[in-house]
Image 1 (cartoon, one colour):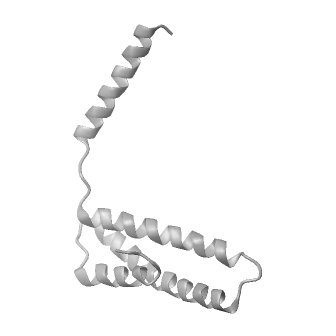
Image 2 (image 1 turned 90 degrees about the horizontal axis):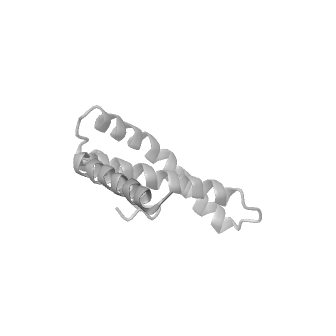
Image 3 (image 1 turned 45 degrees about the horizontal axis):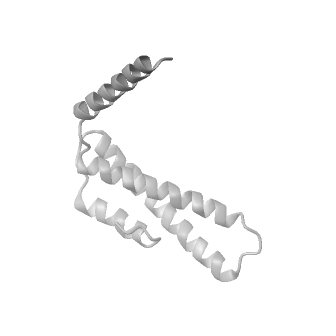
Length: 111
């Protein structure tokens, strides 16, 4: 390819990107929070699976992992319900959001 073709392709791609950015709709706060909840939950769940697979864990490490598992099991249905409400266009209650935040913060969420 010569320089003119390359420049034209780059210019077209930039215009497409700019057009998409201007046309995109912003996420609602509840959608953003759901994304954060799900991402953190998945990262912690994956971390749990990696840690549990390690041999020679100390009893203290096993206790931490047991607590983490209990929190993840308790948080999962709350996040699912929150997500269903958001996906249907509703607004979850503050109590629902705070319950999830409290659980995830117990395993380092920082929400």
